[in-house]
Image (cartoon, rainbow, N blue to C red):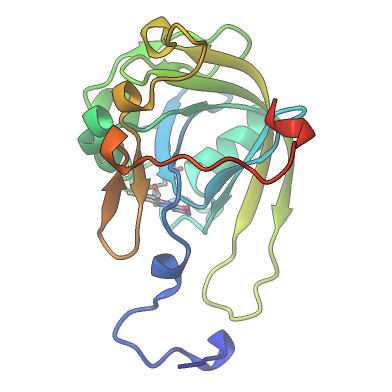
Length: 213
Ligand SMILES: Cc1cc2nc3c(=O)[nH]c(=O)nc-3n(C[C@H](O)[C@H](O)[C@H](O)COP(=O)(O)O)c2cc1C
């Protein structure tokens, strides 16, 4: 089939989310000016540059507050900071729980039964149960054009200014132990994928790549 998104897809559900898979999950903690903590998952998320290390996530409009912003975006625009907490098999239920739509003064980190732990360089707390954290400084937000009128997306770009890695994830050869990390990823619909040592495979690149070092 071929479809032009502006004319609709003709399927029971919009397939787009199932066509860009698997997606890493940005699990974003932030605080507002008053210090209220917020935590939410975003699977329109990725690393977009090695140097300086840079991540992005994309947020649709919120439906609870008057400004129609999701709390993560409002907080990051207010404070210029956020943390990405790595989402694993062990934290999957809490990650999902933290996606609840709630008022801006609700602390989803506490509500999901998670433990806040201080960051080093930013004020937003980290999720202790997560084994990897990126402390991020806002680079800029970009408003995507709202051509379909369905939703308006704001893309948040952040420079990773601090990286935490649980020491027991670092193997003797200096590489990350993916089996122990046990990442999860977002698929379409209500589906997720898990990454285990059984599902990882290796391929050498055809030629030396300067950034692969
Ligand atoms: C796995 C997962 C991925 C999600 N990805 C996104 C996303 O990429 N963009 C988005 O706007 N909402 C996404 N959501 C929904 C948000 O997490 C949800 O709207 C949340 O309430 C936003 O919280 P906030 O207003 O506290 O920032 C996702 C939810 C889940 C469970």
